[in-house]
Length: 301
Image (cartoon, rainbow, N blue to C red; front, side, top):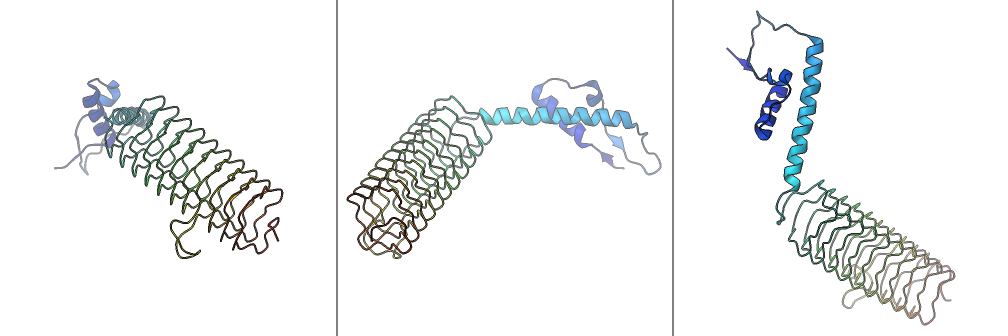
């Protein structure tokens, strides 16, 4: 003798236990064990089966929604799972979210100043206009994250992974972005005054109109190009970018667009400017000593 308990019946039973309320009579009446027999098959009613299936799907969706609500109200703690949660307009300053799963979470306009987000998963998260000043994002994963208009001034973004992230108009003044992966990132009109970008990967990044005055984009320590990873700005769009007094020693700017960029008093010694474009750029006082300028348009002869 064997018995079959169908999936909809189980779901309805669990949902009833969690909520403490009854579902539709049609679904509750199914909480029965059906005896399987080769000689006796239960009668089949297509209309009833379809209605019961639709009711079961609706209840399953309600149950899953309830579980998501419970999850999104979990206490803030390291390694918490808040993926897909709406955490907008919330004050999470100084919160400890180390290694938390915040995938696809919404933090619009939230306060995360001085928050601990070390190695947190923020892939595809929406942090637009969020306050992340002084936050610790060391080693955090932020691919395809939306950081438009966010404040990350004085934040630690060291070794963070931000490929294809949108950082348009973001505040990164005095931020530490050393070794960060910003390949393909959108940094139009971003503020990076005095930012530390040593050994960062900005290849294929869009830095149109970005402010990088006094930023450090050099190689750490001494040595010649190739001995250690240098900042990668190859193929980057730096049209009208502000790079006065920036340290680009040994930087890779091959194929970069620096049209109308401000490079006054910048250090481009040992930089690779192969096939770069500097038409209309302000290079007053710029140091090009030992720079590679093969095929560069607008570079000094």
